[in-house]
Image (cartoon, rainbow, N blue to C red; front, side, top):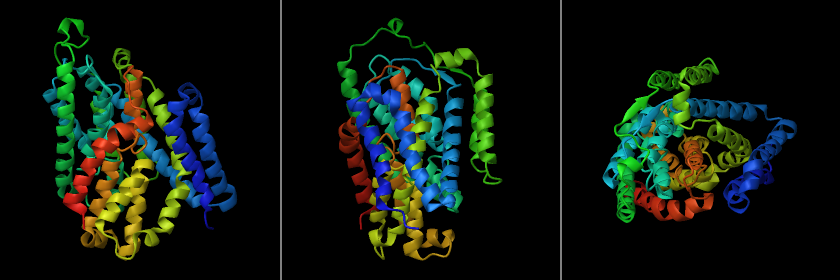
Length: 417
């Protein structure tokens, strides 16, 4: 049965609420965001369940959401049990090195794991002069762009691996884009941070809360982190992967010293906000993804170029979660390429798959909802009383003037026809 076009409106309303409500009525949004997200999600779910009776799509979306929140939530909990105390203050060059290490670590720990592990020491390292741009560039580099070298790095690439794209294909083909993208963003950050550093009065070490040497607490949680990352590769039986992740998270939480959680100011609010908002997003975006798949050939044409996939996947990844968007365009490529299986698709359409991969990962940094760690980083920064941009402020002050030019360079160098 055809999904009516009006059913996309709950998704549009939810995006509008996430963008505008914190700006117009922040206290109201803080109290009622869960009601808004879940109510709009319930409209879409109810239509699929009682009018379309599409239990297949509902079950598939539910499984995707549970897998998503199990991975993101378990990494959040385990990373919250690891305390990295750093020596302040950071120079611009030290900050660049830290972000580069974070971008590399994102490929080993996933963007969520790396972001949750490093955001607190990043804030501490810059505590005497932390500004909104510190949080934004951390989201750009550690929570998104940095994680495009392995399937573990970002959820879209992991979904591609599960579809049959070889594990080593990602690093082999994505490293030039990674090098250019990370290099441009680090260079821009260095210039901005250098100006900020020159304008900020130096604070004597004894007046800061930073420690005099780097310290690590909660290191046994590295074992639980390894368990979670290992569970990623389990596909059967159903929910075994998620069960292992949640069990590792529970073991981590109950075995971590309370002093470590207290030092990290750890609580469940950031992951609770992500879980609720993305429950609404996953539910309401079903009609949008369905419409994309149904109209792929009309939208893309009979012989689409890789740049169409780059901008198409990227643009929608900015407003949809980038993982299902990746799958939507990968399925669309199957439809227009006529490949028999994933091996043939990869062999004959490497530039197109590369465009889909880079578009999904890089554009995930364009908004707070493009990738789950973005929201979590913002929530932790807000928890630490750091000024962060509003939804629209993030887009107009940072994504458009800084991220977009980098994306244009990537397009011109690698995907322009």
